[in-house]
Image 1: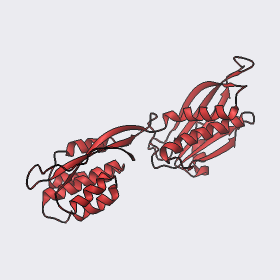
Image 2 (image 1 turned 180 degrees about the vertical axis):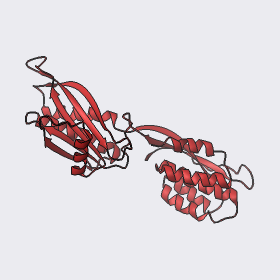
Image 3 (image 1 turned 30 degrees about the vertical axis):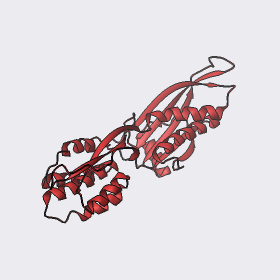
Image 4 (image 1 turned 30 degrees about the horizontal axis):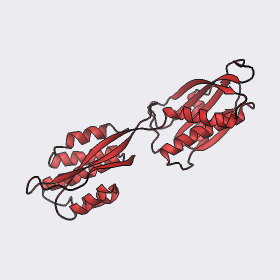
Length: 275
């Protein structure tokens, strides 16, 4: 849920007060939902295309280009999205929930994408341009609305150009609405001038948040509510960066209960913005 952007400030400043904590800040790029509004992070996906027997090469390439774009964004380029084809049967309502649920169950994923292409009549130019309409049906089994969403677009095929290349490019363009958007956020982390606070701060400054959290956990067994609140707040911030919305909220609630810190409201706003 995050990628390293840059370190805003890592030199540990002097204590602001003799017995209180000080802090450092990190700049982190946070993943936001795509333009479509569909949350794909952490979900398994499949891409299927309808095979009508005449545009198979183009349609398979559309599916491939679409899957590649999503894999680059959500799986660091690893090939984790299955590509399938099904025969186009006349009279089948692919926009129906039953059809998409069946497809989703057949492919064993959380989110199923289905491409359908329809020619829009005679070529604009009998030598080169063939206009077409492409439809994309999407069903997300984890969406509480439980509906099939449909997206449409128009373009044209050039008969004298490579069909596979055109298909790949069409698929990549179609994925633009589903890839993540990003925003830079600055996160504050508190620490005290002693170990193991230093150790946790060093882990966090290197973006090793799980290791930092393990250290902050060891600091919770204290009667000093201020220190315990700082550790709980830091854990909440790390959970937020890693996209763990519920855990981040729970840890921030604990921090507020012990001693509400000045940065609490800002962090809570960041947590609420998570998908």
